[in-house]
Image (cartoon, rainbow, N blue to C red; front, top):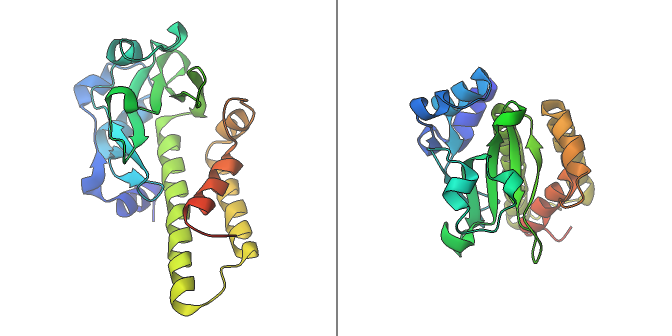
Length: 214
């Protein structure tokens, strides 16, 4: 199965939001990133088992134009193009509730930049992925890992088969290895940015959120 087939099968074609071709073709990003946004799209569904929700912005506005009046964002970030935001599901999406902006940096060939505000701190930006297709492949890989964790936890409840620490550790290492193959630059950069958790930390948080006591 190709990545596209796996991606569409996992998220569901009807749950993928495709972006307006006129808008995307005007962006200064690689053609393969444009085609991905136009032809395949990004999930509008929830991830991390429903506790964070995506809000896809199909018009991909400038960060400053769309949100500069609401948030005290650094001037250097205002020219980023926002393609989606995230918010806690129980708080809602929009207004002062946005916790993270996912942006395209047209000055660096369409790299995916995450702009977020650590609790009590200023807004910070960092490289998340080298391109939109790599961002999508990271989403799929991490969501599949979440799904495996929850399925394994349910199986433990039903059958009593132990949910072993070694089993989770092995799967975690395989996931991290796959992420490195997809986008090694992003793994290295993200894990060395002081204002962000490493990808290893993100994977560990998935284990905690699945309800495992391991």
